[in-house]
Image 1 (spheres, rainbow over the protein chains, first blue to last red):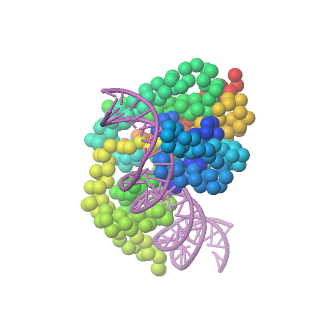
Image 2 (image 1 turned 120 degrees about the vertical axis):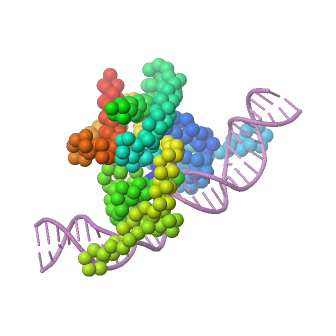
Image 3 (image 1 turned 90 degrees about the vertical axis):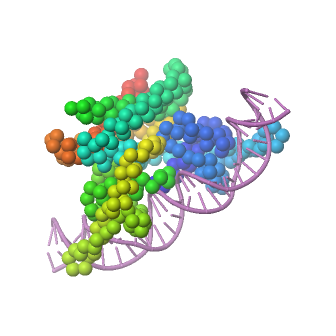
Length: 180
Length: 180
DNA sequence: TTAAAACATGTATTTATTTACATGTTTTAA
DNA sequence: TTAAAACATGTAAATAAATACATGTTTTAA
């Protein structure tokens, strides 16, 4: 689904926290922010260029080693404003995309032989995911100090954890239904 | 995110259950399937055409009233096969897109004045959503008979309900944190 | 009986996103 | 010291999706 340019705001938000390169921004989607959004560098670099043309961001050139030039981007006043306006605007809800759920929707027969394989596969995935998220939380927020310093971030991780717990208990519930 | 043509399989799945028109298919995304996927008729009509060219589906012409011609689509054997292959294939996970979560991620300060407004707005939304889903479940699955006849569909609705419950309790948790 | 809502099917344009192509530098670990 | 991994930045081509444009019919309720 072609979203309404939310990526722009994600980049603004990330740059507001810390000035960084397109490469750095792309990496963010591999770790925690990847829990709820994805983007490739091939989407990020051109967008940064357009955002700069729109005066939302600007960049400085840093040289690493002998020749390697990095473009370190940072927010302009306009970018700050644009980001804050977005924060204040009402949030639209988009349907989540989960291929497993999609498949399940079409399994009409509770006795379908596909079901048990599909479910145990999902259980494996979500158990691993939950463990990974919990480890991530412990690593990033060992004490309340870190939570206070990065409140929203901690809430988002907590949400991902709650989501996985809910997913797991839902899968368990299905298993119990099937055993009868 | 340009998905890997999952819409194709959704249409196949919907057509497998019941032969129907593009208009009918488009309407499906307004009700229950809209919980986890979206599509417009302007995406559906061309896709149906392509799927027909690929021999996954075929159509018959039905005339309504004096002049109105409807194209009623149905699966071919190839379409059946393609759909079942998809069901059996491993499911990829895509990051859910929730703009509220996205915004929250960037609120570093627990004392931000934006927070309480944002959260109460979300609470309103998710409470309404939960009530709506629960009503939908009662309407579609009043007894176990309906659940058995449409097992996957009921699971998906239950999942949406669990998701909303989880969302709500997460929001409540945040509120409690804020009150301290 | 008539106006609005719902039914029905498309196309065009723009934007978003993925995958692949393309190139070169610096750091790290064997 | 050298090879692999990570850093760094782009472009091209194809597909996916949203929004707007465009048209006409049938049903329903006032």
